[in-house]
Amino acid sequence: MKKIINTPNAPAPIGPYSQAVQLGNMLYTSGQVAIDPATGELVMDDIKTETKQVMENMKAVLTAAGMDFSNVIKTSIFISDMGNFAQINEVYATYFDEATAPARETVEVANLPKYVNVEISMIASL
Image (cartoon, rainbow, N blue to C red; front, side, top):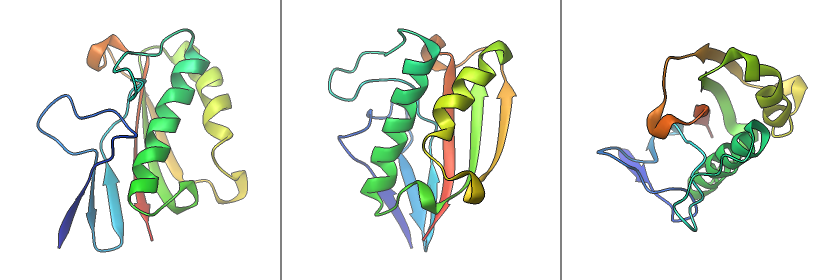
């Protein structure tokens, strides 16, 4: 049975979608951008700060589903400039144990919602 995951600790969806959907022991998250859930404002001081906010938003969604980053099996990272890859990866790496890190793709795209620089989605399993 499909279960909708929503938490006030991550930004509210800005369209007709859920923060995450759990089906059985699988969790499929929507992409998160660097919106501070407390203020509704974008956090875009620099790419590292932006990436940290994205990961903290994702952490809140995982927590709402009773999971954490150790449950993540796949991530998708969308970035507006591949030149930011190293800095994004530096922040991203602090959330995972390298020995058990999830599968991942990183794709440069022409544009992202709200003209952010990075958006991340995840698939996790209990």
